[in-house]
Length: 195
Image (cartoon, rainbow, N blue to C red; front, side):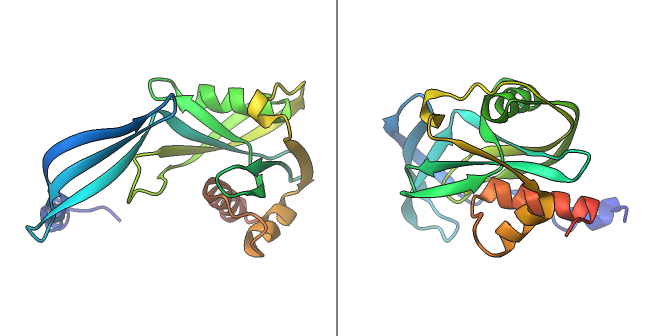
């Protein structure tokens, strides 16, 4: 469907910012995130506060898929959740860099895989009520195996190759809960009609 100018202008009043920022105060900063508290006037015209977590990297995720419809998951203990998590290969990419370059690096680091074909599946915002984190999810195909190069925080990481339809089932039954993984796996399942 092609939107006419009349149709699109109908919604432009929703695009203006109803928030007024009065002041900002940095509360925390490290190499990965910055937390700022803002004094604001909210959309109802009342004073309040808003906390924002600024991410210093883009979130990068990859769904590797071979010619036999197998994929790879990585598992690790997530400190924030205090539990083990199975996920598609993921990592961070510097804000000023090409997300595809970061995706190639992350896939190699975590699984040792190299891909001859890359497809951008989607761009997403994660937890956009409290953070500005932007994510990019790719599908990697035409795979060849090399050596992995995990970072020191990934020393306990496990890599699992499995049929893609089993990864879909892990999403559907709640064994995979990571947001990027859920989005990426279900996107590929829909795109390629794999169940």
